[in-house]
Image (cartoon, rainbow, N blue to C red; front, side, top):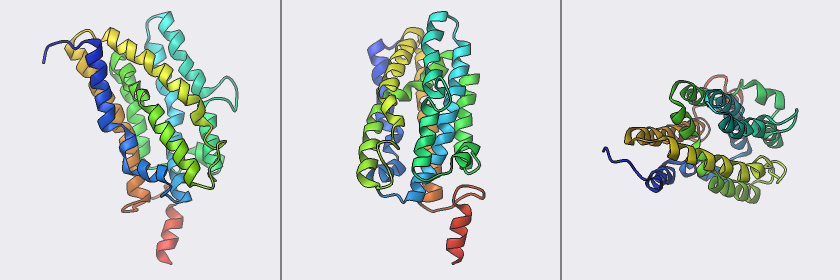
Length: 250
């Protein structure tokens, strides 16, 4: 097709991708939010997700360096502050680390990334490389999964607090800030792609970038499900590997 979509049509197409492919639909999240996972399975999720969270500022720093004007850089650099914080112990990465330790993981082990799944590393690194190697328009568009995050945050916080006695509001404090940060960031990125995608080809690149980002998030959950739910094939060196081997041997 060569007809350029209106801004409203482009936004509707983006939201349709989220409605069909966002990772709130993944079976692993259904289990997580309904209380069907064991504490060890929740720990595996928190551990692997830390690698994603800690890589987000690297991605945003790449975008920041590529933005050509001062006003855009002022807006985008707030994302770095949100995740890295203004000082030690502040910011989204520190709050996710407190989530991980709150469910019983050792902080040094989490930060070492030793126990993460290979698919976690592969998917997250692919996202960082995508932002580095593709056009700036595609890099910005790939962040638009933030349009859908308030829904999954509401499901997650309510479900985990209701169903896990080892989870507290303090454990999930990371999500409090994201409830206003994510919509703010999504609004800016959405306006950016509407303004800068001036041809149908560029609009299709925007849609493809969002699909790619949804795939990145989905692939991480595929790995968690395969390793820790079914068929339960935990890669060598990943979290719980030795414990699982001992349980099977016994």
